Image 1 (cartoon, rainbow, N blue to C red):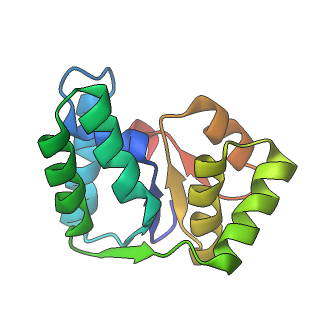
Image 2 (image 1 turned 90 degrees about the vertical axis):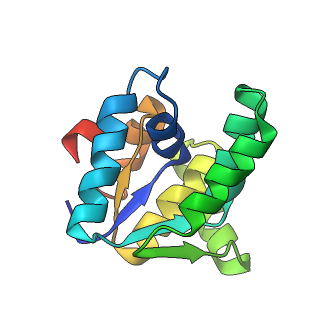
Length: 140
């Protein structure tokens, strides 16, 4: 794995949600990242996705927002704004590699910063592997 990681929102939400199948491996990954002080590079989009997944998916809007804020305060975290340049890069990745828009944003961030992408999304994992190093949480 590279020196930095870009963590898909699916991994962050799973780490926070005990009922998720990958909860233990995602939570263990976050603990290890914090222990090693590994740089985390996320698009600002991750904060919105986390709040939405927990707020909407679990019908707990206050909890979703609180966890999103908690993630935004992680040590070693750099949040990357989705500016025009990054949007164009993500759009190119989405079109060429047949990725969903939000998935392409994470891939573009990982590529731009030389980070390893960590995801639970099988399609994102398969299609992004041609662009950046990709790992499942247990393999990271």
